[in-house]
Image 1 (cartoon, rainbow, N blue to C red):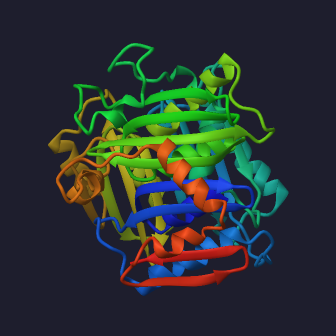
Image 2 (cartoon, rainbow, N blue to C red):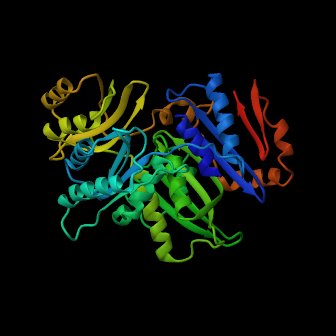
Length: 446
């Protein structure tokens, strides 16, 4: 339920500045402070309606599914090697497959991609089993050629489904199944193993020459049977969604949580139990959860130069784009491309195959080769500019705002026990809009 709500906000490209989450029995209260991508208040009535509609739909236990035809999805995991994606796309074009959208991530020298394809000759998804087998075999040959016998890799052609997993969540699942997290460990650059990660909340925003790596701490709360998971890392868009995907896919239920940011650093606290009812007891399980959470925060932190591309869509476009990158000696570290009307819009993070920055001459050559609009963003990793805005970091007195999850939970649980009644008079918003839901209410304060 919680993940679906956050997914609605994420898909609307809203920035979650703060979040407070609490559940008690059959009741829950989730509070999200959101803005648009520019950090401005949401005033568009269409966006507000879509928030209501999406959250209410996610809360309905049983709702009639609208029949729709899914897409044929190509899923690949393996070692990150230059040119692999380009060769796969070239084979798809030769086999008469049209790419409608694609997304690729790299992390810890591993790569995962999901490519949605249609049959160019017939239109729509690929349904013929013989054709599916042919495409799968050809793609497997390409991927095998980029790997030695003892190097793990996989190629899967998923049949169309009416309930396909969200693409970004599926990428998390693919990379976790590929065990990209095994080389991850929480950063210890700011202190020793016994350092309390919660100390960051008591420092009143005064940073201690500490690194911006990912710090994870897991404690057991004996009095209530929860495991307290604390995460401190660099802030960026979709961070909350990524950590919730990981906890959910590890079969942990979030009962209470809080998220906030100070300058460019995000703080998250979760009180969780496994879906079977137990807390994180074994050292092996704590290590795996820690590694998986570190990986979840890192997968979008792509190195390289960001290129935003908008051009007229056509058959074989993505194959041509990746070919230009490959022939120019560039390696793709992350990519996302889709269609909007007659145009194809995508974002690529690229770097020199030797690992160096892209030189201006190469960039100029790529720009001339690719038709359409190309915007170069001089950034090597994704961060959240909203996290550094005065509104998100400072109170009206100029002091940095911090929160205590313990105090917050005590306050909210008291209110939850009385069915939220004390909350009605707590805020006096200038305007609020609500849409009745069968299982509760979705409310937006403006």
